[in-house]
Image (cartoon, rainbow, N blue to C red; front, side):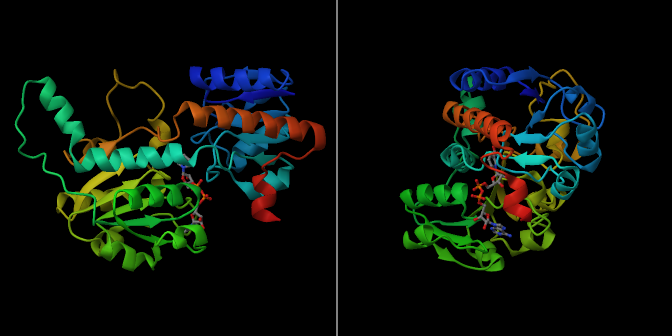
Length: 336
Ligand code: NAD
């Protein structure tokens, strides 16, 4: 099957080619650097499948154009599918497949890397030492042992974060509409979101972006947080209302903020914009705080995760071509 691969980076090509070769080179992978959008959807003409990533647009307008171009499968090389209009896909007869789990540890470990870096001010220490400034003022951290970590969403990634933080000697609280028995058995207590926010020294978000979790962390939620608490979001940007969090940082109510995702990241992340003037004033403000650490959606970025993403994506496409059904179909998971 010919597959139009949108938002291709050199690493996508490397891992998808390897998985396609291992699978017997069944598919013609047409690599496109362009993001999927109403303007670029036409590039899929002649392809039975489209392979897309987190910031590719797959709303009704785009899916209409893909259906016109003859596309039957949208294979996401990601677990989140908040960028896809599933009802439109179903109406148009486009199957949507995803990679539900590739390496939860990759995202969990990056989350913990941000927590540790922010707590001990590693981002600031790195620059200071290189400039010959060996003073410690402003770098004071706190022991993680004995602190309370609130995990919102204890699916694959949240549960892995909970396990790691228990290893540091933290008390872990969680909120999830479907509590995980294995996580509970480790001693994690499930509470309501307001209880979690009020009790946690570190709040870390691992729920999917849905209408119910959009701006879950808004001005009211920030006020409910413990003064000086750390907020971490490695899930999806729009779970956090960024201006509300900036207000919390300015007031000193939020002690530290760590982000791997940002609501408006589609115009920024995965590109080298270092020679351009940053147009997003909200994002620019975030970068001015010494107690904010932003990575550009890199939590998934390990060799193990990219290998698994590529292999599962190729398996989805192969199964769809053979049987009319992908291995991991979002459409049936969500709408059946
Ligand atoms: P998952 O489906 O295994 O777990 C999600 C959990 O969130 C489930 O247990 C679900 O019950 C829970 N949940 C749903 N609504 C909730 C709510 N309102 N409050 C609290 N919990 C709620 O998903 P996962 O594999 O653990 O991934 C979690 C999220 O991480 C994904 O949705 C994706 O957006 C994000 N992610 C980010 C990266 C990255 O590179 N930064 C990589 C992969 C995934």
